[in-house]
Image (cartoon, rainbow, N blue to C red; front, side, top):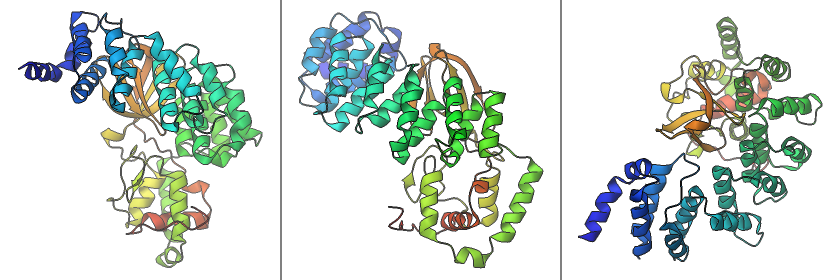
Length: 399
């Protein structure tokens, strides 16, 4: 009977937790955590409370929490321990913050635990943690999480540290650096300085970074991007001319001579950040495996004019935060407390009270002009790979 009552309560946990976050209701739920020895039930309760409080960085600690926390951290189930730490952060539990800071910096801890600790403290926006994030850039294990996390802060060394280390990073981390620096106007200006000085190759600015820079809404920055990368958006007449020209070049004979492995390598570097093909890549934009890829007109239309037809599900949301960050991404979910966006490189939950301005763009996250950045051979290889009916192995040079 008791379990039935508990399970009935779980069905309304998100509602109970959000409405009664600082009342006896939440305290009662926390007491259940300390009284139960059922790991699955503890996990269900923790998930329910977390859903109800999502988007809130602080909630007053229930009086029953210290006893519950002590018991949950002794659980043999890692999921219970992890969920309990997440909840402890919302309650500003100093013990949890100390534990996660120590774990993030502990080189003997597992990579998974260290990265998770960084992500949780960033999500909490733990005061002063940005100084440790700057240190963690030097550690290959925590580097990418630290680079992404710095976008949530305004540490004075962020730009200097990221730019001076940029050439030593791998491709994935370089893209994290670009997205972080493109999130604020002052940082973006320094990023473009580095590109103009050839400290960063202009070819590293992929289509998604360019769109993010454009979303900052600065005419000066947009003009600089245009001179370095090309037009962010061309006119319909220009596009029709380009499509006709490329169709004339990409004959069946030309495509038959393509290097499909090289084409897959190009896809992995320029498209896989947002699109899936043959089960590989990220699901930010549409999965293109089942699209009309064998139709050259379809491919060229979508590559040259990606904003020509944008599904409502894939319209960009542009959000400016009270901390000066601009985030461009797809809407995952929204409730009375928070907005969740999927960007090119991370999933971000934003409390509504930290949003200064938001708008919906009618254009695609993918800018125009992608094919113009490629050589004739590269364009041939990419188009041929996109039209392939089966997955193609990468060449040894692309592995």
